[in-house]
Amino acid sequence: MSADEPVMTSYAEAPNHTLTTGGTTFAYRELGPKGGVPVVFFVHLAATLDNWDPRIVDAISKTRHVVAFDNVGVGGSSGTVPPTIEQAAADAHRFIEALGFDEIDVFSFSMGGMIAQDLIVAHPGLVRRLVLTGTGPRGGKDMDKVLRTTYYDVLRATLTRSDPKEFLFFNRDLVGKRAGKAFIKRLGERTAERDAAIGLKAFQTQLRAIQRFGRSAPSDLSVFTMPTLIANGDNDRMVPSVLSDDLHRRIPGSELVIYPDSGHGGIFQYHADFAPRAVEFLGSGGPSEG
Image (cartoon, rainbow, N blue to C red; front, top):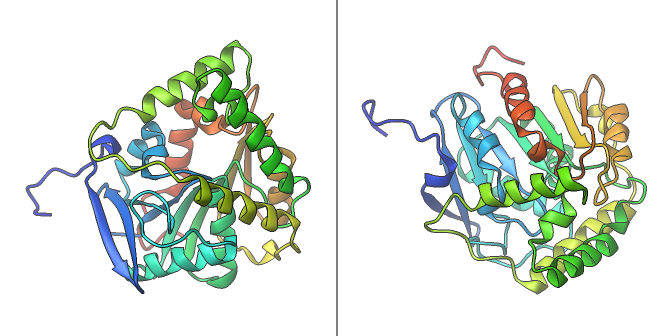
């Protein structure tokens, strides 16, 4: 990018890129000013590049170099979806390493937060600042029930010809329904070069990986020394809201934000509050920040 070229800060218009490493081609998008520590976005269950709320990505990209990517076997990335969250974290590390980053900030949501945790456990010096939203710790209570909840809400969405995220992410009261439809509308702002939706087999593999994560022995999160921001709605049915409190207790010095009258997608329902909060927490990405 030349000095005279304007900085891309619109996620809906960010170009698609690919990078091949270790036999895997990763699809990704980047925007915002280059330089400093990048913010890497770790996406949720079944999600592609097109599932990030542009109101949050755009706000962060005004001051930070943002990179979002498709997990292996999903969207524009090649390969087969890995059977464990631990392997997904190893795949993410391959991608980050191939981009030449030796330090990153992380913005994660739901399954992405689980992948981010396993990434930090395996590479403790990689992440400088951590945002965990709508997620929980390895071995968290009732996390393994996500499979049943997800299938139930996908069925409800099918019967009403709705997007499953309207059921999975938002309360089914009037406010929640409005927030869900507004979120889906924002996701549709990108009209060109959109990702292919996840396949059924890949979706089921990711669900089982989350279930294994929920049933396995907890990781020692007391070793997470980076500043950490945790956020969720107060009525998360996918990853129970109590698990955000659990993360807060396990990660020393972490900040916790719980939004009222909202579900798994609380940060999207309250994006007008959360986006600037995340921007402030992540800071400028300069070398002097810790």
